[in-house]
Image 1: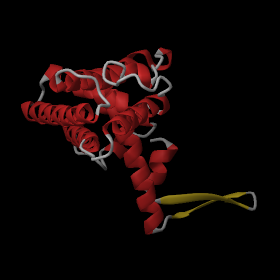
Image 2 (image 1 turned 180 degrees about the vertical axis):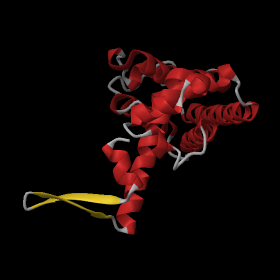
Image 3 (image 1 turned 30 degrees about the vertical axis):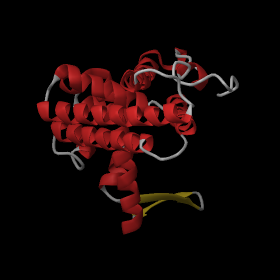
Length: 228
């Protein structure tokens, strides 16, 4: 057991006072904060490991090592690897619903599309969470470990594509987007999101994220060449 796991499991607070190490029990609020921090570390590590290895090949030991905690501490939060995986997929579904709702906003179509892709590119530059989420989705589709999860993910993907399609229809009506099949364009927008995330996960720091104007050049009418 490492020190971090020992502190969490025994609800200890370590401080430095007058040259001495002071160890004392934590308050309930401090303990809950530490539990939340530990849960977030486990969640982030599990997302990375599941994305990298898939559910079948990943182990609790892999996740514990990635999180820098003991395997025993993980079992305080999850009963099994399957339990953890289901929790992660639930989170992915929630994130997908959030993105879909963003596409449904009644904001001006051009501005909305640029803002969503701006947030996507910022996420790809600053952390691997979004990339790992997309890779995990791909693993889930290809492995088909659980048909229920695969269907749920597919339903959310289709719902997002439909939301993008309606947004493109609005943008074509306002004259912001080029003419063409909204459904086909929506599929391309969705594929661009998936592709950017997966390539970032594969190439990591070597991946050069293109500017938004380049990503959306197939969609946007070129009246403002300085869009970033």
